[in-house]
Length: 221
Image (tube, rainbow, N blue to C red; front, side, top):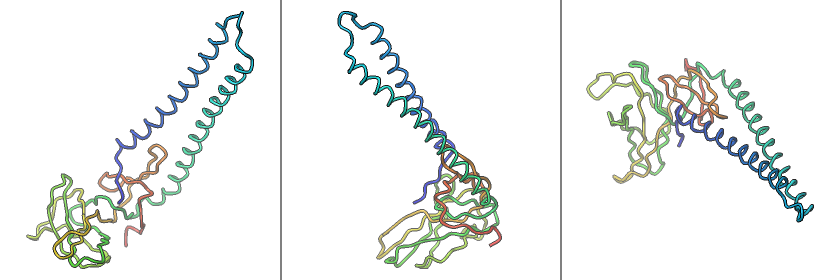
């Protein structure tokens, strides 16, 4: 199942990476201070064994090299992420399919791609609003054919515009075999870099990882 990401999650990821780098540099500086102090305050009558000193210098060199490599790898990852974002800028204005909430503008139907269990005899589409409150249940055929949710309740009134989540329940002999979030098509409004990940900002403001997209189509499909 695809998990939508939020700005808070991305910030936490970026902060974690920055903290790791800062910790590595702090360890490197501490090692240098300790090695310098050890050489400075050694007992002149019992000087440090040269082989031991050489060993510590080798360790120092390894720590320094590892820190440099980490910085290089971080820079490469950032550049790859920017290249991916640039490549995916062509997705803006198109419709991406992913297991994420869909935005209903008050009139335009939302295309849902259910994938019920083959062993089910009944399939229910459970619709919930942005607060997680169930607002509708729709019986679907046991099929992976796309379904157009028109945003109209059982009384014929249109639902309010906003974000809605669609869960497909596969049922057999009255028991739920599987319950999973359905994939929906949403308009891509923007691409962003969050840490080293490319994130798509969808209509309505929700965000998903670009890697979670399973299909892409023109918005006039």
